[in-house]
Length: 101
Image (tube, rainbow, N blue to C red):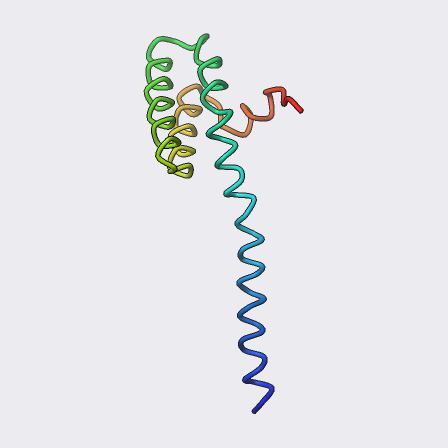
């Protein structure tokens, strides 16, 4: 009986720890998206057709406003929509861009 009272809280604490570790990179990625995605999308939109370029610029502007308000996850969605309007995805845009270290 005593083992059950000790095991349940320990198991719950370990589960929450693993959950916290698993979600941290996603939150870090969202902050990075707000810093890099707008310029990458604008430079990619420069060679796009007028209709696609308009969609990209509108979604990038909305994403920047969401970043300013702290809604990084929602901004990432807008940036993803903008990338899809260009016929690509955010992963290929971020991997193609050089990183300054």
